[in-house]
Length: 276
Figure 1 (cartoon, one colour):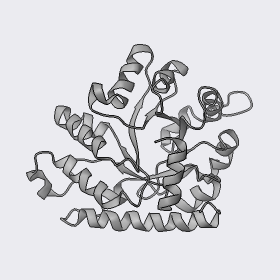
Figure 2 (spheres, helix red, strand yellow; figure 1 turned 90 degrees about the vertical axis):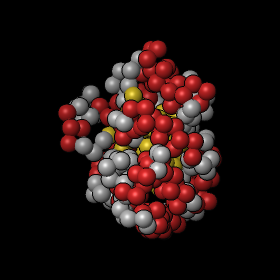
Figure 3 (cartoon, rainbow, N blue to C red; figure 1 turned 30 degrees about the vertical axis):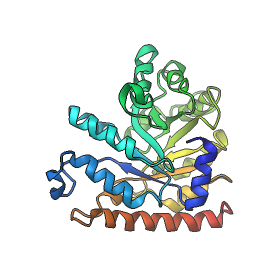
Figure 4 (cartoon, helix red, strand yellow; figure 1 turned 90 degrees about the horizontal axis):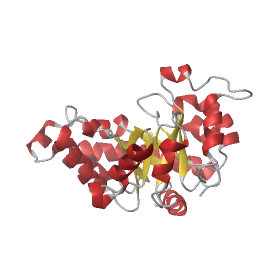
């Protein structure tokens, strides 16, 4: 999915919702354990129930890698089930260099090699261009760089002054030279809404992946107020509040209800900002 296709889906669905598939086998409804692949069955039903309300799905690879071969198989099946009308974004936070980074890119981008062909991947930029370029060499794929996260430890490095600006601002300015806004997005935590004004000075037209709305306490209204652009420019991720809305057999229906609430809020916000 390229930038224009993503924008079209956002306007068509009146949504900039990304559903996080941080699927923990210990938290899914018990009756699913009877299936050959319980995690995929859970994800499949979530996707089938919500794909018209969201524009992206974001599995977190750790939840799948931790289960070995079975987990990888669940991830492969999940990646293949994400419809073409939704961006497939793997949250893997890779950040190595050279051949290692190339192999990570093949793992998540090269369907002939791994069975997976995600549209985008999260990457840690600490090692610089060497860790990012191999992903950009896959034509049409997105790199989603960590810029400003909402965890407590972000204070350790991301706010260090680098002359006349902070490190996360330097990361954005530097990465802007590596590729355009049609290939790079940035991760900005929802609980950092006061910093979105600064972020937009450095990345005025880039898409921002925004985790932290919902269970983590981020405000959708604040994120929209400071982060929306004429093309929307946001993918707001919600995971637990949607996928774990119920532990019963109605989990998919309840997930849809929660996704619909967010989609309706997003529709209003986009109308207020004359995006739709």
